[in-house]
Amino acid sequence: MTDLLRPAARRTLSDTGATATGRPVVLTAVVAGAVSAGSMLLVTMAAALAGWFAADAGRYGDTRDAMRVGADAWLLAHGADLHLDAATVTVLPLGLTVICAYVAYRVGVWAGEAAAVDRTVDHLGVVLSAAGLQACVYSVVALLAAVLSIHPRAEADLLGALVGGFVLALLAGGAGLLTGTGQVRTLLGRTPALARSALAGTCAVVLLVLAAGSFLVAGALVADFGTAATVLSRLHADGPAGLSYTVVGLLFVPNAALLAGGYLLGPGFAVGTGTVVSPTAVMMGPVPAFPLLAALPDDGVTATWTTALMGLPVLLALLGVLLAARLVPVERLDTGGAVGLASGLLAAVAFTALVVLAGGAAGPGRMADVGAPAWETLLAAAVSFGGGGLLGGLLAAWRARRRTRPEPSTGGVASG
Image (cartoon, rainbow, N blue to C red):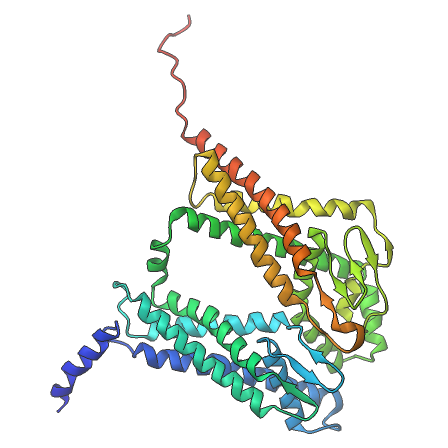
C-alpha cells in the first residue's frame, strides 16, 4: 500500500514545485502565519498582564482587562484604529510594528527553509502563492483577536485589523519565504541592473535620513534629560511603573525618528492642533506628560543653525546614491544622473509614506492631530532627495569614468 501511494505523492509535490524532501510549502506557510501572529499576540498580552500586576498588584480591574489592553496594542501596531469613549487612537507604535514584522520575516525564513521546494528551480509563483496564504492566516488571527477583544469602552477596527495584518504578513513574511526558499536570486535576476541600483539607492537614502532623525532625537533627549526625569517623577513612575513608561516610550521611538526626519526636511510636524515644530519656527502649547516629548524644542524663534539643518537631507541623498552606485557602476553621465534622480524621488515617496504612518490621532481634543503634513513633506523630500540623488548619480558616473579611463602613454622616450 505504501509503495502504491509514493508515486502519487511525488506527482503532487512536483505539481506544486516541490521536491520529495521537506514539508509541503502550503503546510509551512499556514504554520508560519499562525505562529508569527499568535506568538507576538501572546507576548504583548503577557507584557500587559505583567505591567498591570506590577503597577497596582491587581487592585484595579482583572486579568482579562489587562490582556485585552495587550491585544489592543498589538492590533494598533497593525493599523487597526482603537475606538475609545473619548477619542479614537490611530497612531501606530511603530516599534512594536517593526518587531512584529521582524518576527513574521524570521518565521517566514524558517518556513521557506523547511518547505519542500527545489532551490535550483524557478518556483517563484509557488512561493508567492505561499506568501499570500501565510498572510491570509495571519490576517485571520488578527481579525479573531479584534473580535475577542471587543469591549464597550475600547473596540479595535475589524477591517483595519484584517487589512493591516494581511499587508504586514505579506511584506515581511513574504520576504522571509523568498529568502528561505532561495527565490530571492531568481527575483533579482529578473530585475534590470539599473533598477536594482535605483532601489538600492532608495533604501540607502531612507536609512540615512532615518539614522539622522534618530541621532537628532537622541541628542535632544540627552540635552533635556532632566526634563524627562522630572516628568517621570511627577507621574510617580518609579520602579515597575517607570519601567512600563520606558517600554512604551521605546515603542514610539521610530515615530519620533521619522518625525525628526520630517523636521530636517523643513515642513516639520505637529504635536497637537495648531502647533508647529520646524527648523524655522516652533509654536507649541501644552503637551501630555510623556517623557519622550521632552525632546521637543522650546517655543519661539529658532536659532540660525537649525535652519542650516535643512541642507542635511540633500547631503544624505547624495551620499546614499554614491554608496549604492558601487553595486552597479555607471559610466555615462546621463544614465548615472537618471538613476540618482530616480533613487531620490522613490526615496521621497517611501519616506513620506513612513512619516504618514508615524502620525495620527494620539488622544482626545487637540491631540487628535499629531504628525507631519503629507503633501508638504513629499514636496520637500522630492526637492531635497531628488536634487541630492541627481548630484550623487552624476558624481558616481564621473568617478566610474575616471577609474576606467586608460592612462596616457609616455611614448617610451627616456630623459637623460
